[in-house]
Structures are given as C-alpha cells and as structure tokens.
Length: 221
Image (cartoon, rainbow, N blue to C red; front, side, top):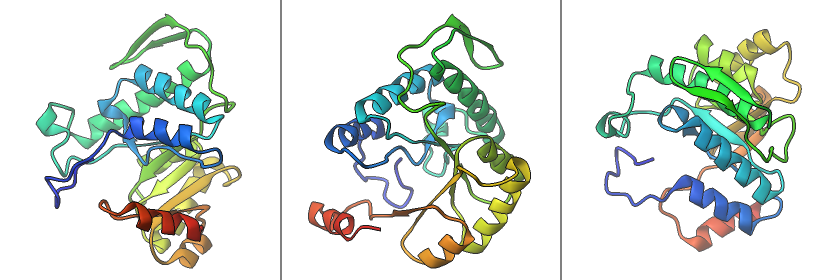
C-alpha cells in the first residue's frame, strides 16, 4: 500500500514478494499483514494462497482486513470505499475462500459472488485450512467477532486496548486455545505479551538497507 505521507514511494507487489519469501526460506512463517479482500477476487486469493502454501510446505498465514482509503487506493481506483460495504465483501470473500480451500464442490450464491459447483484442487498443505488472521483497530464488536471465527488477530492497538479486545474475543470463542495474536510494533513488547500477544512482528522502515534488515533478523525475537 502507498503511504499518505510518502506519495512517491516506490512499492512492489505483495504476492510476488510472498512467492519469493516462500522459495527462499525453509522455516519462516509468512503472509500478508493484511490484504483487503474487498478489492480482490476471492477465487484468485484462494488459488494464490494455496500455491504459496504448497510452495512453502505449509508456512503461509493469510492476514485479512478492511484496508484503508487514507491514500485513495480504493476511491481513486473506483473500488468500494465505504467501510460497511468493504466489511460485507470481506465476510463474503472469507466464506468463498475457505469453501474453495476444502477441495469439495462449492455452491455459493451471495450478494456479491457466485460459485456454481466449482471444485478447486489441490487443497492446502495446512489442514483444516490455512490460518486466517483478522485485523482490528478497536474494541468494536464486528471486527472482533470476525476475528473470533478464525485463527488469529492482527491488532492495531495499545497493550491495554489489546487486553480489552481479547476479552471480547473470548466472549465469542470461549477461550484463546489455538488463537494467535500478531502485534507489529517496535516497543512495549513485555506489555503486549502480558496482554496476550503470541507473535512479535518487528516493524522495519519502508526504506531500509539490506544490511540493516539482516541485522534485525539476526538479532532474532
């Protein structure tokens, strides 16, 4: 995604980059954080994600969210701009993607998407599905209900807010068994861990040298 404060920043394609990561690594768990499904065809995402899962031997995580129109990447490209409509497309896309991952014939007749008896093979390496981590920015119920239905949360929140968010997710799931919480930050790691974070994603500047990036990787978690 482009950045409002850096309109001339050169950016690459996320999914081609993910393929390079899958091919160049053997242990790294990887994935987009996050892809806005409202501007993607769900059947394309289903195919691409399975291909990456197979290429990596089962290391992909699919991070999803509404995205943001702060840079005009929705409205200026003619995409759906309203948050509520993007949320509806996100939920329907997830239903289509997870159904196609099953490898069974899919019959889906929704307000936005149609699947008339198609069967997508091969299935993902990971079963029962590729993990899905859902983005949320506050304690609003709808995004947290969505996250509770899947496998993880990508919070954009303080440590205190994260604790409140996870309380709401527990209300919907019953507990956090098998549920991941992936925080992308550079400080307050201990506070986030106490709040319930299970992954600490070190954020790098958009423009960083290869040597600087490698030094962060070598230091480890």
